[in-house]
Image 1 (cartoon, helix red, strand yellow):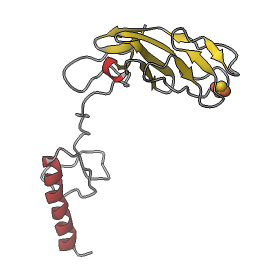
Image 2 (cartoon, helix red, strand yellow; image 1 turned 90 degrees about the vertical axis):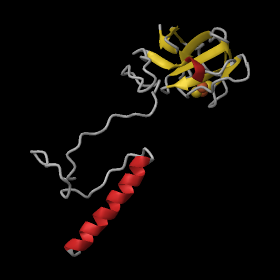
Image 3 (cartoon, protein in one colour; image 1 turned 135 degrees about the vertical axis):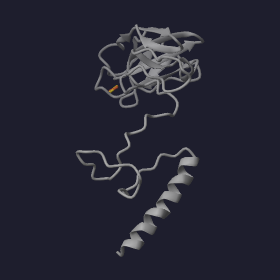
Image 4 (spheres, helix red, strand yellow; image 1 turned 180 degrees about the vertical axis):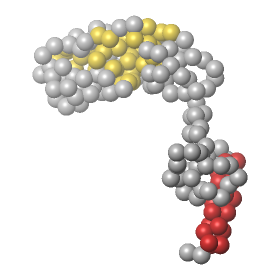
Length: 172
Ligand code: FES
């Protein structure tokens, strides 16, 4: 490809990047070496010497690193999920390992999400259903205390101690 064609292709990308940047979209490109900034020593095959931009979209309550990324509110390091993400009268599976429940508004409890029979991830209850179901062999457990109601599971669910801190359900 002639040199001018490469330049024009990259100029086109630059215009596209400006448009994408205006929309708040991060775009990586293979064009490099034609900007005004010097390349960093040590080499970067992509030609870009800019450091990776930090994530700016709003907060991930599933992160364990304690950063919220938005709103200035610190996410507790042991957080499982934001309070508002757990439906009242239902539950949510967090990190494929914990079933967080909110049977009544503001009252949280949690169990290990793996069924004690063969380890299937349990189905969170909803709409005030007092029973947690295992989708694999239909064992049933009580929301109230995790005890087994029926099915092949050899025992009830193991409780996970949780508390509420700074708007998040955290491990207790
Ligand atoms: S894995 Fe849950 S009942 Fe079998």
